[in-house]
Amino acid sequence: MSRPPLVERAFQLANGGGHPDWRTIEHQLIREGYAGVAFELNSPLLRKQLNRRCAAARE
Image (cartoon, rainbow, N blue to C red; front, side, top):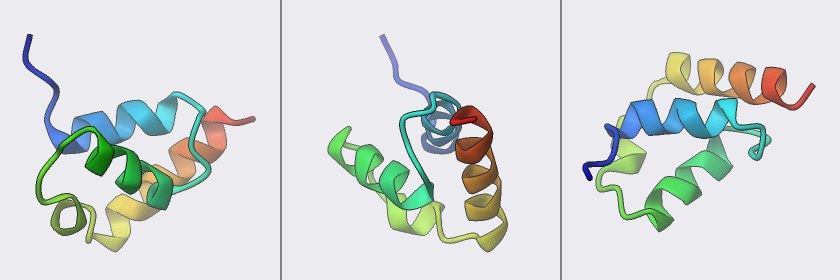
């Protein structure tokens, strides 16, 4: 079974409620073996979106 693309997986993790912000998602993606995580998550807009999803999922 193939795994989802990196950004899609990042949003899955954010929506899951187990992460307070994009930084912990970054670490989780690295643990899961994704390559180029820092490069892919280098967008301030993407980080902001992930943080918002994390906050909403934890409410």
